[in-house]
Image (cartoon, rainbow, N blue to C red; front, side, top):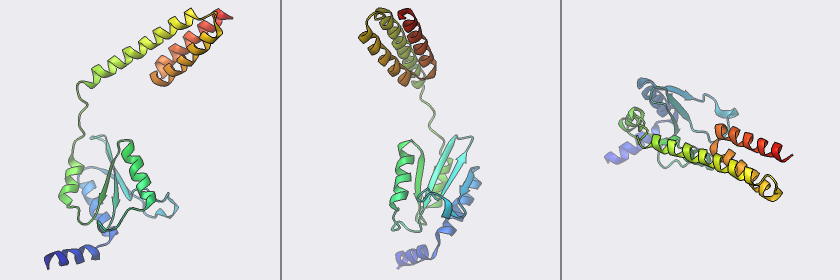
Length: 183
């Protein structure tokens, strides 16, 4: 009997009422909250609301449904999958989602960057620097052989793609010097 009463109460509540509750919680915990007032001119499927917490450096996207029986539309699934694929926080909240659970998510601090990350990044920079040095050596060796030069220039593009701008500039400079020496 109690379950039936809870289910009936859940059905009588609207998504708009749920949105008001979610907005109140976000604002209570210091989030900048956004909900599209009229979505008729917005892309279909984008989450109902999102919030930003500057101090926590977090953005949360929330899809609201009245009940768990309300399923996501295919275009909502596209946004959900895309946001999750890039590491964004995406949640589906209904009247069955306890406010305490919502608050716990809002108050959760981001996991700090592990201490091992900095050495790993430094290793990657050193590795990429080594690639640039290898490229310079390869270009020096192949100045007179067009096939080798073409292969070295292809590797230059790989270094640019992998290394990013600082190493890309170095790789471009190396290639220019090799081409100038050849010409």
